[in-house]
Image (cartoon, rainbow, N blue to C red; front, side, top):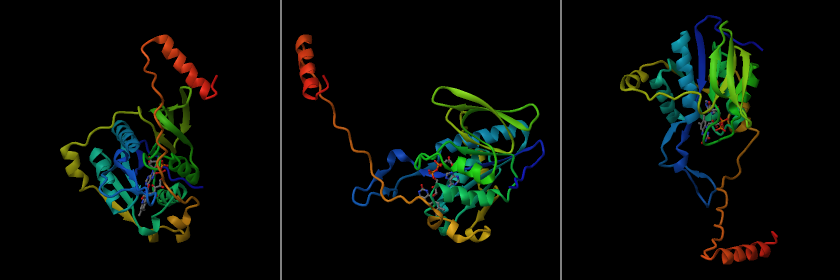
Length: 272
Ligand SMILES: Cc1cc2nc3c(=O)[nH]c(=O)nc-3n(C[C@H](O)[C@H](O)[C@H](O)COP(=O)(O)OP(=O)(O)OC[C@H]3O[C@@H](n4cnc5c(N)ncnc54)[C@H](O)[C@@H]3O)c2cc1C
């Protein structure tokens, strides 16, 4: 497996980002079981904002270049412009109907084909996309590229030798401190930094930065490995969880009576 590393002290960082619907506003069509996306605003995935911010901070500290990469429909360009307005240097938009319907595997596979042609020291993904919520694309991408990965990163430093990173990664119990050699992939968790808001100058400059479009024919792969046909997972139905019925409220003012009613209720349920 060949990995192209820039080798210089200047860091080359790739940030894969996804455009997502503002999930708080998405509803499920009860008839078809599909998400109603019409009229729902799209945003840069919030976890990807941490990834973009960290890449820009590393560039500001060590010098280098930040490339923003997305695979998505034409409107996903807006997510690229937001990341460029924050301070990314250039962008790659992988857009083609042949990529559509991709599950996480086909997404990671398609992104990997493009990344294999690029130079990088570090790839920073978001922890997860807030719509798909699988947190699979980052780890799959690292496996496909044959590089180390550190997931759920909340703190990141470059080692004194400039060749390793030291990361704090969240676990259920607390956090682990991990050291790994570049090139590598990390996934960014909340708390890693405070993403900056793009300023007017940044927004104006964004549309003048280089943005390359890549389609399926630009990749050296069989079309069957892309999009829906390259996806081992296929979503049959999406439905909201059943709404929980409210519990009972014991309203008796006398504590003894309230306790009696509670015992009676629990006994009926077979809990005592
Ligand atoms: C034409 C077209 C139409 C598409 N339509 C849809 C759609 O309707 N709904 C949908 O959810 N997806 C769509 N996609 C994108 C793709 O199918 C999903 O991105 C993919 O399944 C990711 O799964 P996830 O959301 O669980 O990501 P996760 O594994 O949770 O994402 C983790 C991280 O991986 C990176 N990542 C994830 N997806 C991408 C991506 N596409 N590009 C770059 N980096 C990424 C981000 O850093 C993200 O934070 C479309 C793509 C194309 C080309």
